[in-house]
Amino acid sequence: MARAMLEYTKTVLKKVSFDTTLFCKEVQKAVSRLLPYEIEELKIFIHSLVQQNPELNQCLIYLKA
Image (tube, rainbow, N blue to C red; front, side, top):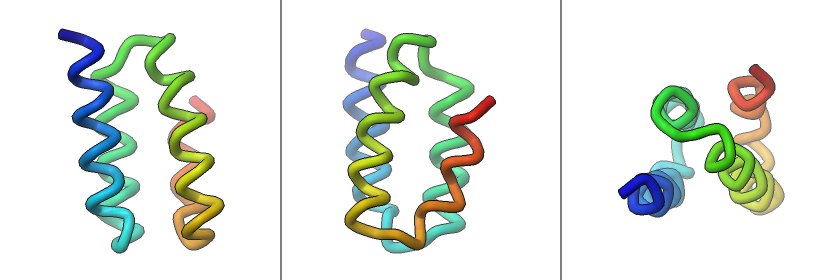
């Protein structure tokens, strides 16, 4: 079940990556819902998205906590 939530989160983040504000909100939600090891995997995924869309860089602050 938890794995499904991570995959769903990745799908949502890909779809909202056009809007920085929406993307940041979804990252915040993901950090509050996922398990610690899933958050580590999500960080890797988000870093790859940031390389494609540099404007999403400001959302990385939510992953530092």
